[in-house]
Amino acid sequence: MLVVGFGCAGAAAAYESAAAGADVLVLQRAGGPGGSSALSGGRLVMEKVVAAAEDAGAAVQADTLATALIVDDSGRVGGVTVRRRGR
Image (cartoon, rainbow, N blue to C red; front, top):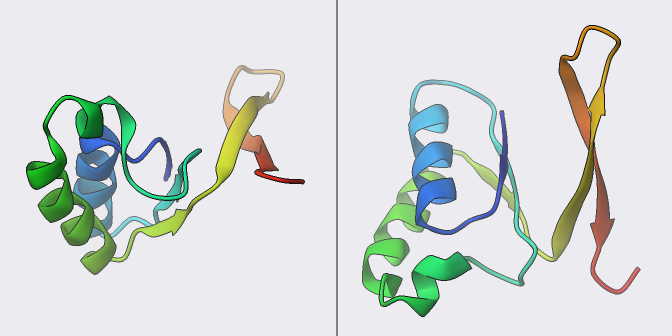
């Protein structure tokens, strides 16, 4: 499972998926967890949700921007193109 963004919603999705046994990769544009949750006072909740997602096995790739979805002829998403910060 691919999760784009590691704010509260992304961390919750990553946690639930990893806890259910899925392989989870999280792409986060910033250098660490954040999103609008960090700006709106959700930092305390975020720390617990992020830690739970990582403990459940979600792999987080920070400083990575998802730039486009790779879609096959039937419309199924098969991947994503990314750009690493500074590259």
